[in-house]
Length: 384
Image (cartoon, rainbow, N blue to C red; front, side, top):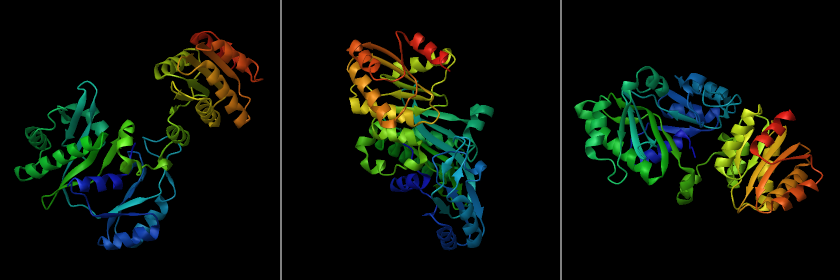
């Protein structure tokens, strides 16, 4: 789960990481007043769950309260399209208004999980304030990595070494190392999958300040962090993905037109591959899970049918804990609730497969049955 920059900075501050003075606003008039309180000049930053804001017009420096009001008028209530969003973009409902920083040095710092190391790794670069992907592509040696032993935690010598690689002066080495330690503690204690600052700056007054802030919390840990879950902003999420998440259904929207209902993540991936190999393209990844009820299957299929891209539905169920008859009843219930007549290709195996097929056969739906994934994918392709 992602949170907004201003929310991440509030958490940074609780851990002792310095942040700029700022205020969240939701109207142009509030932006004007906040800029006046900050000395008449400020930077307005769109609060969206996407990177690349600056290049997309989502970050603007203003030199007067009136200029702040005019800029906020242009930014608020619009969708911001960046390289990390789809063509629709994401809505800008809030702006973070901050005072202009006295930047003496810009660096990049992030903590994430390294699958090869099987633990946290800290990424650092003296080339802060730039797109880190471009830095990594053009000058990979400028990206320094520091794997952390999950048992021992971040050691003092590691944070000192990172501070040196970031190019901080001897006078700033200690506060930089302290900031790195604080961020690692934040990362671990909040079950994060990413903590990122770009840039982490040194000011002319010799302070280390997080000028930006990104935090992503591991979804599977949110039951331990009710306070963080309250920070969720569903307006920044795909509508159908958010609906599925609330129902504990694994769903990812894709670009194709074949809606897929599958139980099991591995089987779902195989189904997507088979459809692609047959010349079709999936509209979604959906794993309804093993212990689904009629109602949960129906909810999953309703999500599929709510996607205007979907022209056909492919059901691939291996009956085990989720019996085939339960899946069949759920599909029929969803089609009834949505008053849908989209063609349906069904491949079922396992527990109560004959009962499931009989239920679907007698439902009056436009059903084509297949015995293998390949046959199901070919049936989808043939109907295009």
